[in-house]
Length: 266
Image (cartoon, rainbow, N blue to C red; front, side, top):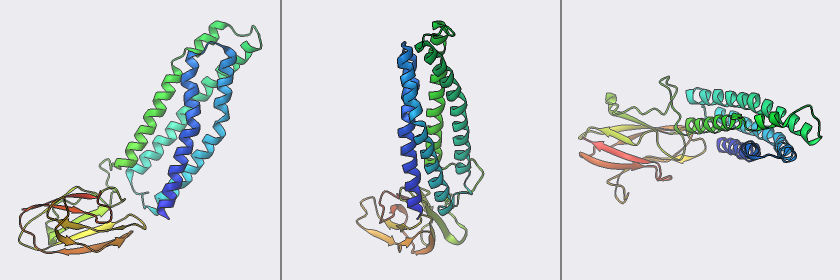
């Protein structure tokens, strides 16, 4: 089910970006407008997308929360930082954007009605404010930060990453490798000594997805040194790898060849 929750989360993100894109377009377009009637129309267009945007936020939060449970991510620092950034981002957008848009809507509507309660100077002052660009900058910056956190999953030195590379793992001649998704192993390089067998502890955390670890003489993967059994995540297995002569070798997941790296035997 994990992938379905991830799909739901991503679908919510797409819906949010589509709906919020209307508001972003209006926000960046308004400073170039001079006609109060046109400004009012653009603001109404922006307001019409708000309902869809909040529904999309609910969808992406639901998918994200369920995916965090099935993917066992709640112990990961990057997830909590992402949640915090998203909460701050929403609060900033609502606080800064709503107040500015409400004031502009009131002034433009008054000018359309021909009232003298507001002046053209007030209209121009709020319309030419730098606030729309500040709002856009915070929004784009926050979304890029969340994207970076989700892709690179930093630990911030706090641990919490069961897929952290273990290096040579000399004790017991065991080296650990992990797969959290079908894009990459937790490390692109392994190293161990020659002339003795090793154990390769493989942890597949990619729920419902099969992975394995196979070692080849080079990147062509035409001649195998060792081919490990496939396991479907979440599961783990310890491979017994025979002694390998010194040299540089290539390892990968045979099911998802994009998951690969190099093995240095010294």
